[in-house]
Length: 299
Image (tube, rainbow, N blue to C red; front, side):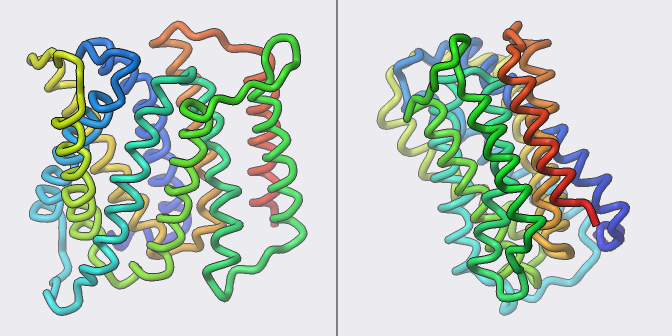
């Protein structure tokens, strides 16, 4: 994807990926409802996640055969890194994310995910030698963190945080940020289609096995569920392929800030499709998070 090497196009494609990721938040909740997954059934939620990402892996391989232009030599594929990426970015991230999302509001989860940009900056500074923690980045981190604190305030001003809800979303977001930095550091010479598709297939397999063994809900498999899972697979295959290509060509700490558009799209779509209330704390928190993005990107 040579077009992504140009910064302007990288930004445009990044925003497309964020819109797709934002739409995944209401989709997952609606999928639970239609599939008949009970609120106290983490195995059922993991099972749904596994099916979606296994389908995403197959779709990414289709993308590879349709759109890939570069020759891939087998001895240059870093299988060890792809296995580690699969464990972090698919198995661990989405087992916590799917459970966490079922235990909190979609709009709230969307804004918590905005911390990805700031966590990416921190991890980049730690793991990548040429990434420095500048005063501008530090200011953006502080402003964004204030926004996340505001988001977690209840109507009466008390702090609201549940480990298996907001906590799991934050853990999943941290794992995603770690994966983004690892791709930048170790995956720059890998084919983005093959790396993304393989890590989906490898990471989804344990999710499916765990889900099959532990789920207690009677899953309602029908055409509508298949279509919902197919759209979820399209979101993942398309977004992760785009995002992986962007990270291979550009700075993780600089482009990580575009993850802040996920809460904008996710919050709007959650309000529209789930009927969730747009509280003053979500709006204020979103303003601070976006202000942090502006500070981080200001030259």
